[in-house]
Image (cartoon, helix red, strand yellow):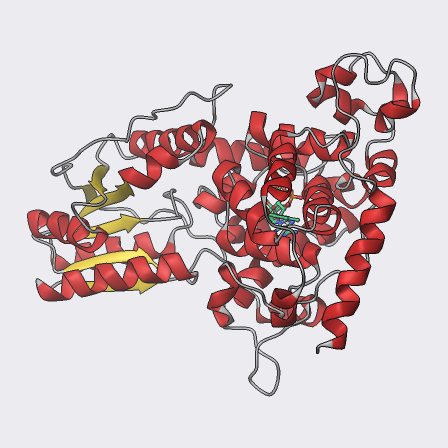
Length: 459
Ligand code: FAD
């Protein structure tokens, strides 16, 4: 009789409280056997981008290797539900308890509800512990018991609430032999480069960032042309590293304090989504639903230009091509492209969020939905709608020598220095096939402010 540990967005062995709880339980049972299980929806998997497929594949490969290849991988989909998939393995392992880390987002909650029900039918208990966060969503509340809507007071109380120290993997247990194992899902699409993922890689990335850029993170994190950020978002989204592990090593200095605040944004958005489950796909500020957005074939053509990085605005296009070629985009540029989609193209934020979800290897339901809503002006603590990013000025500011743009847009590689941000001003600027701007930014800015006035009138 083994305990089953269902790995979810916590693909690691160290600092995994729910896994340690499973191990302690198995030791109390007497046989100290833990069956490590991952379940994957193969229909969804094959719909992912190549980079996303390979990210998961490599993450599972690394996890399997650290478990002496004793990870059970069970597939599910149209013919077998997630609940039945987990129940099948629990029965085969003779388990009375399945352990997992508790999720707080709508899809994660639906999964754990389905699994809990299917297990109950066969007399097995689903025990959920811990979370993907240093402070579990729902913990930090205003003195009157209501959730925070504004980040700074949330941060102050989140910091006060504190978190436990990281825990090492418990000892004195054995991994159960893999059962009915389908193996890792085979990627059906290629990735443009060798994707690296997994717990060991995440820990190395964290150490390298500490040596390389953490000390002046406060100064360099907004520069798109420099590698001034940690690139840990994929590892955090897949749980290859827990935020506790990171927070435990932060000191009290400018760079460290700003980095802690960024980790806290992830926690804030998870808290907001937990309290407002509909905001994964719907407006946090409902009046923005009434705003006039563009639809039809012209709007679709604009969406496609944005997706492919062909809007004629170099900073926007470089970001969109960085997303397609690397599965990641710099935070500053995420804000620039999001503002452009909503306020220059007048499209709804959900269209951009869906494209991000399809292509970001660090896709996170809370950070994505609320990163979008913050930029679109309809989220909690949002950047006011009337603050419209100027995509050209943002380029001059955060890519001052134009290196970021040239790196991702070969049609502009012949232009030296910062002039690359306005290629249409040069005689040969568009000579290599780069498009002219698809909209006039100042006109569209006026238009978006007009549309804002309309929903103010109807408030
Ligand atoms: P660092 O600057 O090194 O920050 C460290 C960690 O803090 C990040 O890995 C991330 O976990 C967290 N973090 C930093 N900034 C934010 C932020 N603004 N909001 C929430 N968490 C933050 N992040 C995702 O992880 N997944 C997403 O799907 C996602 N979608 C986004 C969509 C939009 C429109 C915007 C504006 C932001 C989005 N972000 C998302 C937040 C942010 O852009 C990324 O977390 C960051 O760029 C990742 O790079 P990094 O690991 O080098 O970040």
